[in-house]
Image (cartoon, rainbow over all chains, first blue to last red; front, side, top):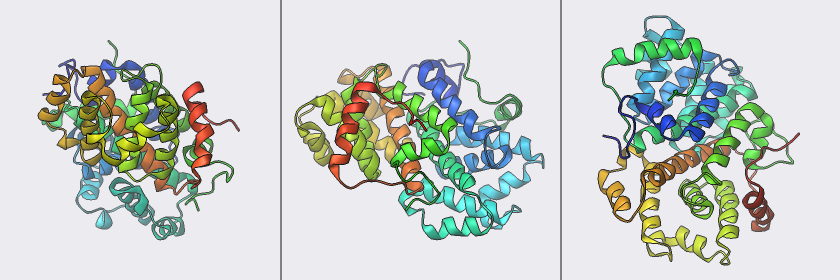
Amino acid sequence: MPHIKLDENLAGIRSLAQFRPDTGKALYDLAQALLKQNSSLGEADSELIATFVSHLNGCHYCKSSHGSVAKYLYGDNASTVDKVMEDYQNAPIPEKLKALLTIAKAVQKDARTVTTEIVDEAKALGASDREIHDTVLISAAFCMYNRYVDGLATISPTDPAYYEPMGERLAKFGYVPPQK
Amino acid sequence: MPHIKLDENLAGIRSLAQFRPDTGKALYDLAQALLKQNSSLGEADSELIATFVSHLNGCHYCKSSHGSVAKYLYGDNASTVDKVMEDYQNAPIPEKLKALLTIAKAVQKDARTVTTEIVDEAKALGASDREIHDTVLISAAFCMYNRYVDGLATISPTDPAYYEPMGERLAKFGYVPPQK
């Protein structure tokens, strides 16, 4: 049960954006800028990083919702996303993306542990400054979204089927706050 | 030295908002909504929570900048802010604010450790749902800002005098992204 009184017909961040619409708008604007067309990483890889960080933070709602967006975008029957969550170093993804996931992981743990070495490794594999920037900000932002959703104990449906249509909707139409 | 090429005349998040203005705008809009007039907690206590979380995350730039805003707003020669950073449980602040700082601390560590007990304690001391919400979101948001600033190794001046005029400016005029 949520720690504060929220609309029980809404789950996760949607219930919080309805509770306080002005911060909700800024949070959705940030997700839209970070994960959609303007992301230097492309939408699928951006969502994959968001899912990976949510997985590390143990946030079921964010992992499930962004995981379903990533699965929809990769369109490979969930194979890539599941393999990255299990063991990203041996997943069937480009080496550059693995290096970016290593940076995202350091940011999630403690951002002061992002070393010149792991950044240089990503650069050597072709990552641009903008891609490194976007990776750090996606990881940092999901350290916020995850804490917001779990710190207020929002509703987090356990049935994977709940998240499937959400994944398709977010992939197609982007991040728009819930309407009253 | 920053991990990516940033304007060397700007420090901390200001250099990042200039690097990527669209995400910068969403991040400044969020800070403005969370820390200024619309905060249920009042501006001084909101900035105090932001400073406390930045302190826990070891983010020198955010702790110094928001600490100087809080010091300006409390207007007590920095006494309250310094005492809260040192030992908030024994600082000269209301019991309700101590209970909210306990929630902020749990969110910073791992949001899944926010228990019904610590939330009920804050409620018993008079905290509203909106104040609890705002505390959780401020803590979560600074877990993002701190990671963003430190994950890219932005410039963080060591001289406390650097942050004093910034504290007064942010207190008076709020959060506005840097102009080119």
